[in-house]
Length: 187
Image 1: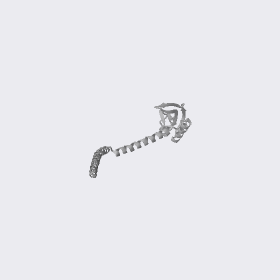
Image 2: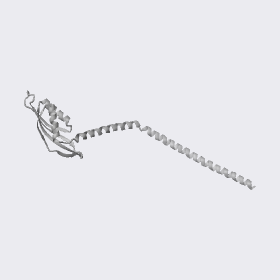
Image 3: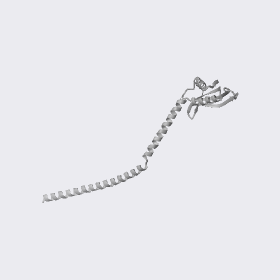
Image 4: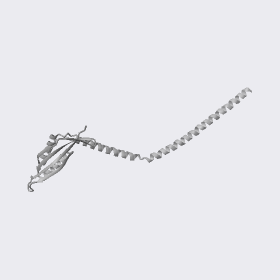
């Protein structure tokens, strides 16, 4: 009878272990189903949020900003290159005389001031001022001012006085002006 009890005991123990294992598997399966539902809800929320974000709009804004940034960077480089031209009075005198010759006027007086240095908004610069007296026809004097403005982009022409001595004369006009040229010091 001992053998039968042992077999029954083994059978009951095996059935008990089977039921415990089955219960554990059922609980794990239910936990997995709950986790899947939670993750599915999270994925649905994330998809809804990503649909609200317009990726193409952001990309177009980014490319627009990059184009603008490139334009301003180029403008800054060009301006810096123009402003870093050293203010050497003889070079400026030569340039003014060449312009006068090309336009057909005669520069009778060129006077320069001492170079000055200053800072605006943390940007160091230097200036030189030139007093000019130019003779020629009225039309040629206007052409001279226009050519100087185009050839010396950092120059500011101030106080233009034109005197016309004889209206019938073709070379009877004289202009006096002050030209101030700015240059970046780049410290």
